[in-house]
Image 1 (cartoon, rainbow, N blue to C red):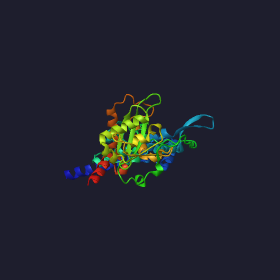
Image 2 (cartoon, one colour):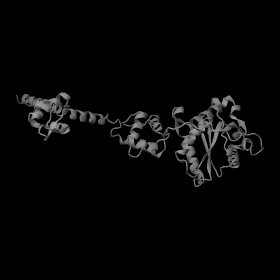
Image 3 (cartoon, rainbow, N blue to C red):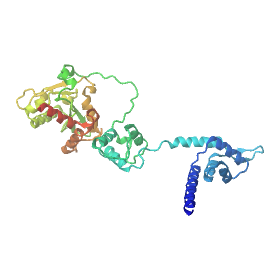
Image 4 (cartoon, helix red, strand yellow):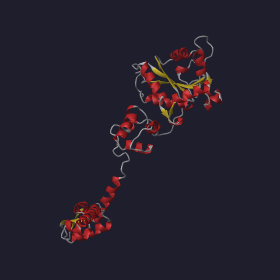
Length: 368
């Protein structure tokens, strides 16, 4: 008998707790606000209104405060009333502000990973998410790239803003100014370049450019070479921004790869019409026997898209060395660290493999 009474008491308490919980979290609707208005006008207290409508008394207090406003009476005196329209308007506005809950939740491990990968290591948000899947990292959070960008824009990450993300697109206003060629292009035009080079079927065709510092600030500059198929990068420091310095650096590369190795690795090089690339004969001839070691082709004036791979890699360089800076105090070892970082950078076009991985695969195929 005692056991039955105990079980019945427990069951009654569970039902009472469930009803109290449902009662406590009941949402006020428009019909409820109309009833509150009638009862409040009739002089009922908030506790009485709560009991009649089945709400918690604190809910009614908040609702009356939300819809309370002043009204002028016929005798020109002012009095406080409850307006269901005003309360509904405020409730709808607060509901819109609330929005959906953050998918990121309290996953601080994921937050620290993104802030380190994008903010400190200069990777893009897309690379950060791709590395999670590639390395098999485990986090409580799984979000898409669009959501990650929205969180960064919304200030969810305390140590990360859109300024830390690469490739910020800015809209250019006005009509594009047409530029006129000032001088005749040196050497062989890109129009005579073989179609096989355009198709990117073979390794050994390169694009070359220079990355300069601020005008009047930097005497030194960077010579950057990008292989068209694998996007492997070579970066060398130029002591002067001259054509003789470019030839000197290419001679140094020939000593590094040997004459035969240079000829096999650098079959063609596509450059722009900058003055530092004017000596096409010096770039093409070998430092040892004056024989041809490569073939240089020149893009059309003001057509950087004809060296698209090179220009995209230049953007990676600018993540570490923004425009307007100086290369005079930059040691060569730092330039080589940057070269290694670019070659290890995961790329979407290669299934998030790096340029170095693709280049090594191509060398293996050639060896076979």
